[in-house]
Image (cartoon, rainbow, N blue to C red; front, side, top):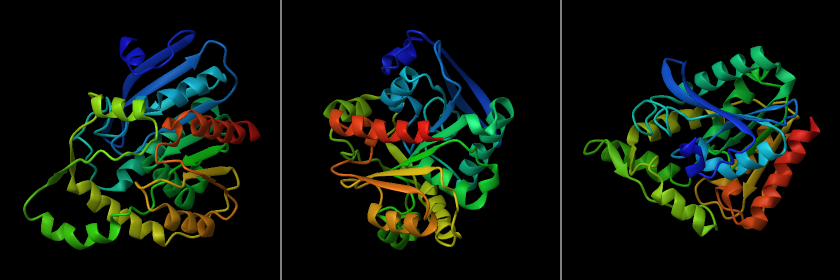
Length: 285
């Protein structure tokens, strides 16, 4: 319990469990937050690349206070999950893990009780599922924040990666200012579950995945809200929003003026606005 309190999780009046699950031949860690006074709905929360579930403590606390049960997954090589740090051979591994977990949750709770909230790479994985495995998706609300589709470094990375790969297998991480909240940025840099190097294999996997996503057909899902900050420098958000308008024409797309990449870890005003949009979608379905 002290581990959760250290990250700011409100442990009072909440039953918290965490354990390893084997999904897609990976040992991933899943956190389960169950408020003592709960409603009938369950959230599956998916974090972004180089994050982990507990960097979303503020959102988890808000969801718990609203009576939602929260299931949060640490991707392989992230947080408490096992695996090589930040490594993935193919985005298909993310997708398979996600779909297996979703099916397990649907069997346990039913499709209409399950909602999805996903950030950045996690949102990209959900978009992969929506555009390729729509019938396997839960029918509750879906909220995607700062979704990964294309990175600003896409073109230069694609050009130089073959040369860089000859001399090194990883690059040093650069901490971007992806939130206007200095306390959050300080916590990220001091977080023992954050790591200092990025394997080039992840970027290889991203490039292959991006090419596949570009060719996806339109998705008819109407239960999706997409939130995107206008000061986000982590993803190529203008290009991404154009793709989303074409590929998910029925989705609700909302720009958050002044919002950075970590929308639910922004300063108080933006964070509260983001929470309101999230809850509006969850309570709409």
